[in-house]
Structure formats: structure tokens, C-alpha cells
Image 1 (cartoon, rainbow, N blue to C red):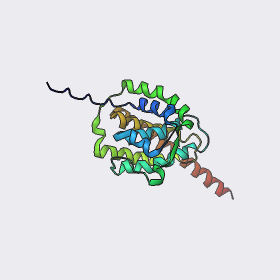
Image 2: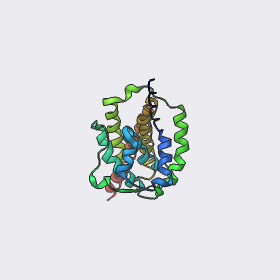
Image 3: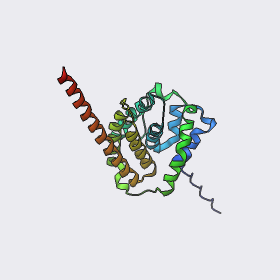
Image 4: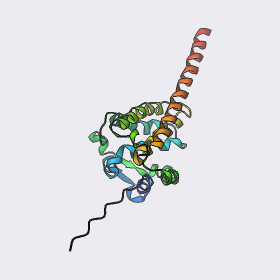
Amino acid sequence: MSLAEPVPERRMSLSEILTDLCDGTHAAETLGQTLQRFGRRSFGVLLFVLAAPNMLPLPPGSSTFLGAPLVLFTPQLAAGVKTPWLPAGLKGQVLDMGQLRSVFARLIPRVAQVERVSTARLTFLFGPVGDRVIGAVCTLLALVLMLPLPLGNLLPATAISLFGLALVQRDGILALAGYAVAAASFTVLALAAGVIHRVLAAALAAF
């Protein structure tokens, strides 16, 4: 009589991961412990967790606080690193999930809605090359996210969040949406830079 094969462990969806993070048992854990629970999808989850809160009203300076880790992680994705690397000091840093619990609670229903219609498709957009391209684009977006621009964090945060979801779901449609929002973000930034340049030029010419 042969033994039954073990049932493979079901992979948690991003909405389930966020729900797990928001429960009281994970009120205080180190960043290293959190990354271990994400597994191979660490980059995708991190992109979403660090970028998505910026789509909601947050206290001033929050985009810089959340964007700084993105500037550390996204170049690693662009370089082809398989799992995120953290300095020892950051690995032991304790995360206070209580501060972000209310934010994630508002995002979870939206993520669950996306997951119901999302599936692995257009997977040629991922892999060794595709993931690196996403990492390079997200690195530029993370730098924009840290700029102190009024409402300037909405588009880059949305784009990075879409890329995070795309990496978790391996959904090329979400990745294409991320590229479209990223292009809009860079266009708005270029227009804003042009306006600022003209205003400064006019002000200097007046003296």
C-alpha cells in the first residue's frame, strides 16, 4: 500500500499576505522576518507594500519614508538579484505594523478585486530580462516618489503598485498598465520641470 503524496502547500495571495500582516500577531516583527514570510515573491510584495500606501492620504514626509527602502530594493531587482538583500542593521529593524494597519485594511478589498480577474498571462514580460526592466523603471519611479512634489507621488506610487501586483501574479496585463502609468508619471514630471524652469527663467530675467 503506497503512501499518499503530500498535498502541496497553497500559495497565499497578496490580499491574504496583507491580511496576515494586519492581524495582531504581527504587530512587531523584524524586517528580516517579514521578508522570509514573503518567500520568492518578496520583490513584488515589497513594491506593493511600500508604494501602495502613497496612493492614500498620508502625513507629510511619508512618501520619503516609504520611498527610501524602494530606492534600496528596486536596483537589486534591476540587477537580477533573486531575493532582496538587506544590511544587517535593517534586517533587525522592528516594523510597527500598527501604524500601517488601517492603510492596508483599506487596500485589501481593492487588491482582492484585482486578484479575482487576474491570472498568469503575457508571461514573456517577466523573467531574467523583463524583471530587470521592471526594476529599472521602478528605480526611477522610486526616486520621483521621494521628491517633495504636491500630489506628485500619486502616479509613481500607482505604477510601482501595479508592477508589484504584476510580479506577484505574473500578470502581463498589470505590467503593461504599470508601464502606461509610469510613462504618464514621467510625462507629468517633465512638464512640471519645464514650467518650473520657465518660471525661474522669467524671475531671473526680471532682475
